[in-house]
Length: 184
Image (cartoon, rainbow, N blue to C red; front, top):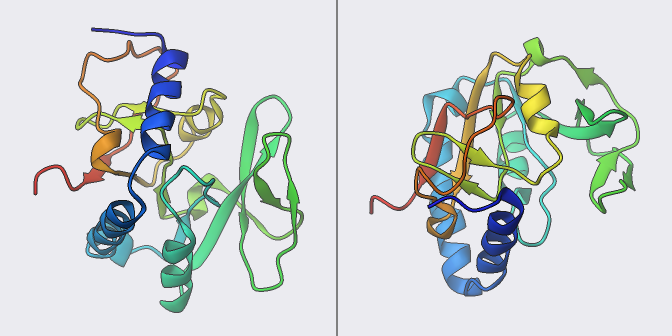
């Protein structure tokens, strides 16, 4: 059964917001451990992550872990015309709030798509085959059309969607791999 993407987006965000804090923390830690065991993570020198919002999987532990391992972490900064770029995250990075209420780096070295080894792609819901329901702006879909590195999404069990929940559009970009705990 297909629903509109905006209706689904609202429903999945509500489900994420209602998760029990302790259960969520355990699931996030298990997903992070799973991510660190992936060949794509282990082989990556430059990893693209987001600065998560309250209802998203917490990326702070992922960022700290990557930096502790000596990897370069880059985070998105939005540009006009629904474009974005990835900027290196450093100890002295300064941030400003975007129009979406998300913190973005004010300055820093920009890494091009060919310089990023692994991108952990955010989303609201995912199918097992890598289809992704994003936040509705199309920023990642636009960026991923020119990105040829490895893409992984982390999905809590409540974020797993059935294959027919929404209709893919021509511009939708799937991810290579969806890590989830659902099989356990």
